[in-house]
Image 1 (cartoon, one colour):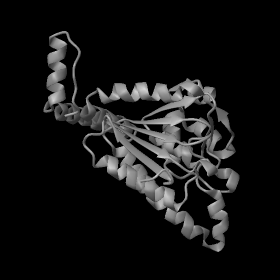
Image 2 (cartoon, rainbow, N blue to C red; image 1 turned 45 degrees about the horizontal axis):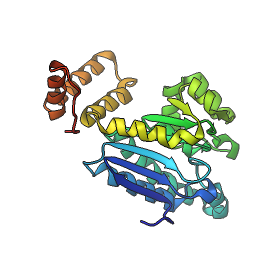
Image 3 (cartoon, helix red, strand yellow; image 1 turned 90 degrees about the vertical axis):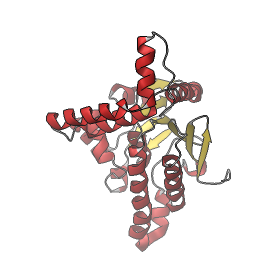
Image 4 (cartoon, one colour; image 1 turned 120 degrees about the horizontal axis):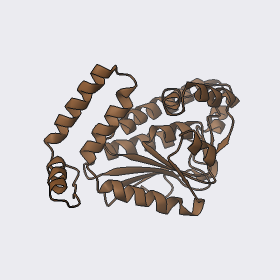
Length: 263
């Protein structure tokens, strides 16, 4: 992997950092970037030492969506190009959202189109105060991809999701926090440090339990209460057999801080 690669992956101290690296086009995604992203996510999924994942973008923005210039240059072959981008993108997002590790999106500048879809796929989102959010799809005469149509109404409600998707208006970070698109807004200069603090905290947590929490919450809106209660029971029982559960219980009884290892 070199600094010229469209997606960079760094694995260190239990943190997997996936950074989009096409700053000359605000990290817009083409076929090569998508394949690189998919490989990065697959690498993370296969690495048991990873405790948390951080998504970020190089340059002036997080991710400005698909590479519209690439769509334009494809001409009559646009459908083939779009298929070559969307298919692995969606495969990567299925893997990303299935990770047991918490995924944090560090958002700044442009968070548009597939960039907003990517932010929605993360479990937690921290935004710089210079971040600008828009779905943007209708501005080029199309509809959302990247799971935005699934995630957005779950995050902000159907009525607000309709507004954002139909009008493709740009909203700032303060509004994004108000409607629940992001968890927290910080000064742009503090974004890296804030995300690092959160990532470090999560690396000290019960990773397997985090994975069960994620799975329960992501499926909850599709389950009737009896099915969700059964899923909760099975998840709890799954945790009971882990070393982290035994450590957590012992720490509680002994009135000390638990030292989780992610197992």
